[in-house]
Image (cartoon, rainbow, N blue to C red; front, side, top):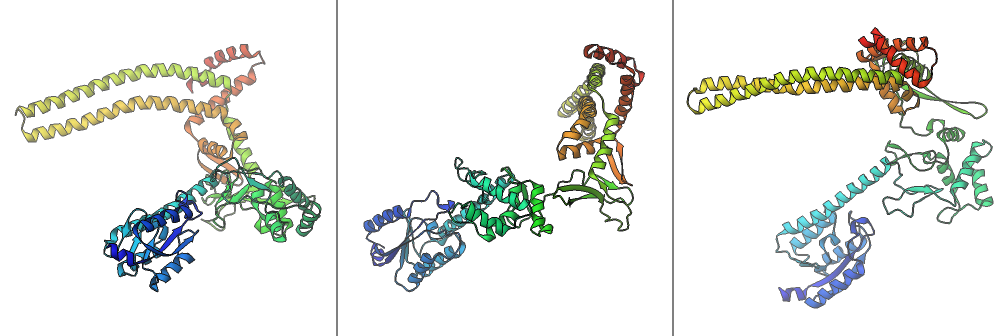
Length: 531
């Protein structure tokens, strides 16, 4: 074999990709140095050293293709490379190498670690090429997942738009987009000019380039197409799409140059009224209510009105989708009117802090009574469970001694096993039920106390959750909201009405004295005690 190797003419192939796939691979220079030592040690004739800096994840490398062509022309019969993944990380190039080796066009491949010959079992080479290809696939998926996660965190994964730059203090992959101290304020001035409605983009471009000497990061002036693209980019008002044309929109954590309202106005000024900022609509109450006439779901839409003075107003209207009946006669209702009706419902169940504290004291007293009753029940259930277990043990003992035939044993064991499972379930349920009742009661009082305030100041999701927690079957008919209030909240509503009567009857007192008197008055109210 040594003589055969010495007759082979070799091409030394070294490759290094600038992409992350080859971050840990030796440089082309070090590959060539080490492989040249191996060739000298083993007496290989290298007719040429070939190298290229290009990824092997897809076919099309010019130097690699040139090497394959020369081997087909029999100019060389062997390859020296660092590892097989230097030759190929895709199934097309890997298949070519494997086929040429099997057919003898390539008589020997020498890597830093091992040899490959036509007479070898091709399984090992196939596995190595397959691992190299899978590595690229995994790397691609991991990279895409990392970029998607970055977008979900609110940071745009691409290049920073004009006026922004990447945070140099963060490592690659984690770099946030921050204000470009040299350009951010000038970009804002460009937006200010177009918002006046007195300047067109070409005029603003000329002012920026000639009067402000504005330069982009590459040192060049801004082009006409660039400024139009900048004015149309929703990134400047805080939202971005990733990947492009995917329909996936995110709210960015970067500092906005303009507001969403200003962005909408600019699109209208540019004649892009139908192309205003893409929104990932999160209408507060969509998906909860149904139409009281036809039973279809209630949807929402946003409308924008621009006054002559340039002021922009946004309105949200809720209306029937009419999917069940195209002739449904119900009209739309503005969101502010819908919220007003919800607050009116919340007003009816709202309780003050003083009543909440008194109710929790009463709940604790009731809990002590319930705990005593529960302990008695648990004691009886535990005794019944222990007796059942003893019966099962006795049954097993009787069967072991031959005092009970198999048929009777199976029949009695089946009955006792079911009884044991039933008693175990009762034990668990008794303890769980009382704890659930206590937690439910406390949650109900807290909801009644805080829901109105949280509805006024909370997030869209919090408002949505409050409406959902109010009750079931919310309907809109004739612009009126109707909802079946939960039974616990119905009881609270009646108690809240009594509390309002008590408070209205009392004269204003000092805070401490007032709280003391309220506790006594609450305790004397048969309505509150009953609730």
